[in-house]
Image 1 (cartoon, each protein chain N blue to C red):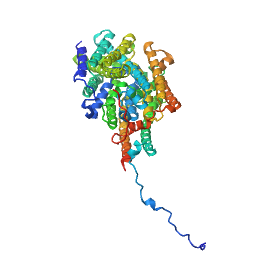
Image 2 (image 1 turned 135 degrees about the horizontal axis):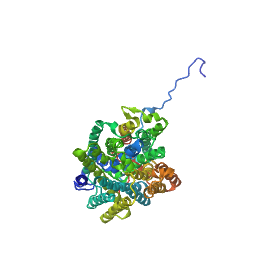
Image 3 (image 1 turned 45 degrees about the vertical axis):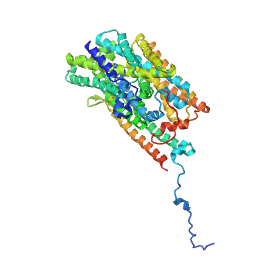
Image 4 (image 1 turned 60 degrees about the horizontal axis):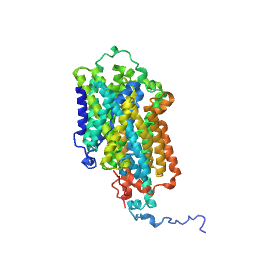
Length: 491
Length: 126
């Protein structure tokens, strides 16, 4: 019980410590790339990264290593294809970018709807995971944890919290790194000094080999997962907003480089938990509660007061993960909803916050629990099938038209959403159809690109008038004195 | 006609203008602002250079990332090989690939900034 309270308090107050203000007005523009990058990393590492990856690795073995690789590699793709031009566009949100590039309100609104859907798909597993953590530690029924986190997030955002100052989110990253990293040291020591032959025999052979055991259609699932994670990162709502805190395009690139390093450092850890979990906690696989492995291992391997302290540490890290990512996501989603769908203003923001939180909470409590990293993977798939083509083609291709963008967003985003909902609501299906629906990116992403390109080429007569000016704005270094047009973000 | 043994007279064929460099009438930034043909060429070439860089990084990334599963499929011995007691797939996917990403990213940032410096020199030079 003490563990729960300590964990929740650390996570919650970590968020409330400094009075939250919009990053516009804070001097975070002059903050060093390391702080900025820590803040991005802190917000990015959700429950899926903290708990879910280790759980999936425990359950399915080497194939699941691609998940954290993809989440990190996604930042590399973002760096290379999107970072500097996106910062130079001046857009604060993804719908902003859609409007800036295409001068079209309909595309902007479609983008807003997609932001909400992606946000919901990302938030739902955070709430479910919180319920799981609470159940593991205290035995409370699952839905309570979700409600606790949802309410905490809503309260935090509604009470004037626009966005946590860079420093607080940066603190969250280092907290999570410590919460996962310190126990690992003790766990490895305990494992090394343990007599492994005394443990009952485990099936380590197929588990440790890629594409061997685990899931059906491993090659398809692996490729689809790779596509979703590498291409979806750029389309997540809470990622783009953090870009704006960089002073210019060059800084955006450099910060992204640092983020990459921080994420890489963090993601070295879950695999260790997964592997140790295979040795010491295989019962989690049979009971279907693999997401708990990170929480259970310290107590199992070490025990005593040290084990309890370490458990408290990882619980704090887990709650930090839920709260920081959920808050960041809620603010981004609520901001978009309030601005584009509800007409803007403080009242609209409040209603939007409730909406942003209630939807996923409803889904979380009424559908059965899927592994958190799987559902987050679906959010990535939708982002990869909608915003990735929009960003990539919008930034590098002169001939994109608003009709093409609309068609692509609807086709890719719609298909991926449908597949995602089919998997979540109706439950994982069996066979090839199940694999296609659970990991849709391999077919939805190419479809989205194709549709966007073909429809754009077919509607060349309706090209936005100032494409050349927009391209100047996106690609010219800020030091050069040129006319960049006078579009400004509405937010 | 000159005699058979005579060589043809040597004639200067270069124009005196080649010894003088032609000065540009406007700075590159003005060409870009007014979207003259030259301005468009400047911008398009910048975009093309950066795109080429981005695509080469992506292609290299794709080869590694898409090739590894195929490699593990076609050469099962790689899946079970061990290095220092750690299975090879784990060493790569849970370890080495992260520093590799950072290394590639660092090289990319260096080159992208170099491209931009060249562009700035080009358009700001009179």
